[in-house]
Picture 1 (tube, rainbow, N blue to C red):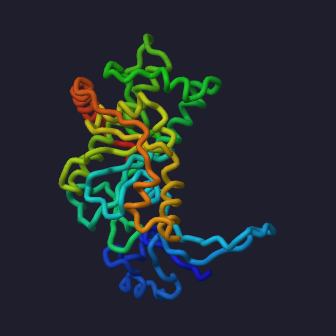
Picture 2: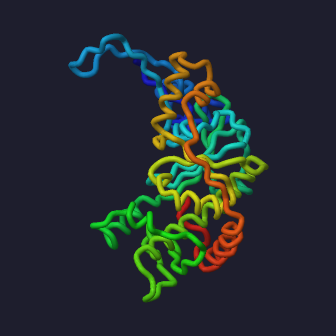
Picture 3: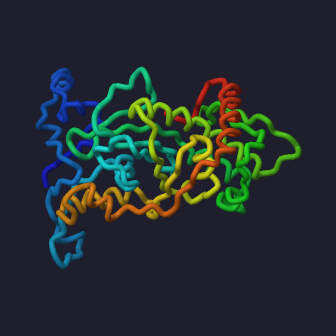
Length: 317
């Protein structure tokens, strides 16, 4: 098989003009690189060959190999977001990276209105991808090692209460070595500290959602959520209340893997297009509606948090 890139990975290499869907002649010329050295760029569903064995194991029949896509981009497909999404759905892959993303029908320059959104290519030429993310996994790992090594994160998380009463806040970013826990008192327990940390990493999502709304120039009908963080019902409800948006948890929480399967199914012709594949393979398992009273309370609490945070909204790149 010849080396080949798909659009989502090619656009991550800083040598690709994703608006034109091709390697940048200007950048390659400056660096003295030929397009032939980088190989062709194809849709993520492209069948690039087949295999008849894996190591010493012979397969019963030749298996087609589909090029696939970047894992973050694949998660958008696994959440049911079409490559030419009209702005009705946005995704949240809530794993090691608390990733907010979507495919979009066209490139829009949001440098001024949404400077923290990272653009790229979708799986099909002409489609675009936007994301913003923050690393919450290392923060939770630190919390487990420091406070609840024996009990584990799931148990503490299940007891956390998100009702707007928590006073603990994580200010600035501990990933940068300058994190600060504020609002601690002798009346609080481990669940209060955890709830305060979770609220602190959730509040910035409200501003990130606004940046995506600037991109789409509309309100999204729902945010689809997957990955490990989606297992915590109380955190998913908190997100619905903080962002005032309907949260839809998909049945298959491994959205990136499901997105890869969707690419493959389209590539081998099991489904005629992404619409048909998504309709057949993506299912919403539960819907979390925002609670109007909690939306009001968390609007006030998030504004207080932004006023406290010296560096402004943190935890997102």
